[in-house]
Image 1 (cartoon, helix red, strand yellow):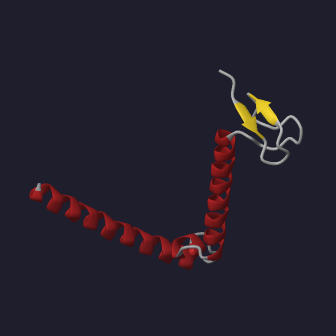
Image 2 (image 1 turned 90 degrees about the vertical axis):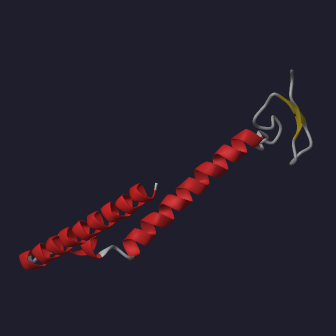
Image 3 (image 1 turned 180 degrees about the vertical axis):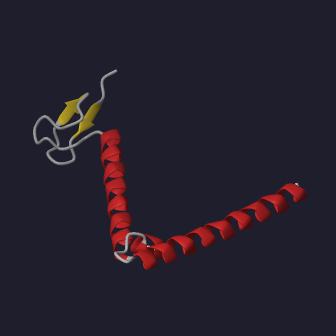
Amino acid sequence: MASHVKCPNCGVYNTNEEYCTQCNTLLSYKKRRELAFAQDKKDRLERERLQNEASPSFYEKYKDHKFLIVRVFVKITHSIWLGFMTIGVFIAWLITAIAA
């Protein structure tokens, strides 16, 4: 079945076309949606990149520091933090398992 779509830009009717044959305007809603999603994803990734550049975490900021003592302190601090988080996750899992 043929799809007849009127171009919103120039008013020409097009049959089974994604772009207008007269003015090359995008007619396909599916294609518009795909392009919009791709642009949204690109914008989101750019915002995340800018946010990470603007405010890196303590670990990311100092893990490659030029002084050995700072690198060692940061890695020890990060390891202790990971240990506390692991214990916390285990306790949360244990409480959930007991409650279920």
